[in-house]
Length: 403
Image 1 (cartoon, rainbow, N blue to C red):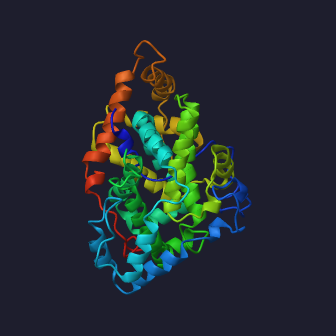
Image 2: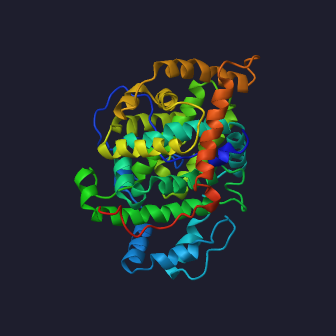
Image 3: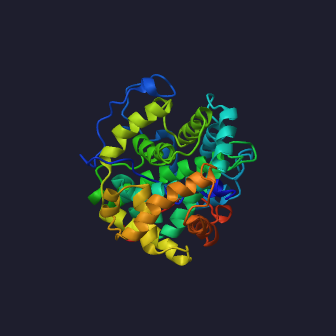
């Protein structure tokens, strides 16, 4: 299953093991910055930290009607070694020239190892990002509400394609190399976030359901990281997918650099997987809950699969989502049960992994069905108008119609 690592994200979000839901509001921050890549911190609360210089810059572009021209200028900016395009407002050009670089602590050897790891484990990563993280963004209340009431929420196929581009570029073999595209993609995404922070507070519908005044804080981006990187790492361990300690560290490093490029302060970025797991248990797990917006988004995302023949029933798809996440979340999303499919998934998938990893000498029952299932999902998001090579990330100029 070559190159699936380049195609690995449907959308953002996921869920870890859930003992219960105490509150959907973000807790007061008490995670120690001694466990961060910076090793120290200011004591700031990441749920009260946004991206002030970029936010003010993009708000000015929106208020002055400059965004369409900026999007046109940025359209051809793709590779990491491409110069910042001409024709941009001076302040934006200056910002991008400074921001479109790796942090001083980035380790290129680790990033290359992470890219190779993504290539070799692409099948599992694709399934976890797609049917785990993607679907479970819908039970992260702030994320689901923000996605739903922003412009992308009205056209989930296009929204998925744009988020898919982020994951595609991050997982590419050359992601952080001069000929790669992730550094540029991350900076475009950072501008999109700033636009959403300016636009969503103008939506009466969003204000009526949210528990915050401004979306996409540093804390919210950290939650998304845990729903992606931390969740996937835990599931790979749970599924007994072979990994060396160096590969695990490199996979974390890739995500550390990624969220730094999105504007998260280094004092909030976990230093080790132990630090990440501790932060995730504190910041992500307690806030998971169903919302009206999230339920509709989940059905939209799962409904995309109806566009192709996956070689399995909808019951199998629902049960695989339940298997990757858990039954609590499956119940929240009202995913109908199919106990025959559940039995097949829970016995067949571990055997499928064992055979692929050379730990099982005989092809297990259902191997070809699982293989077809993975391939069909990949093709769905590559060939139905969502190919990352043809998707352009653009700064929005409005919220969801009617919002």
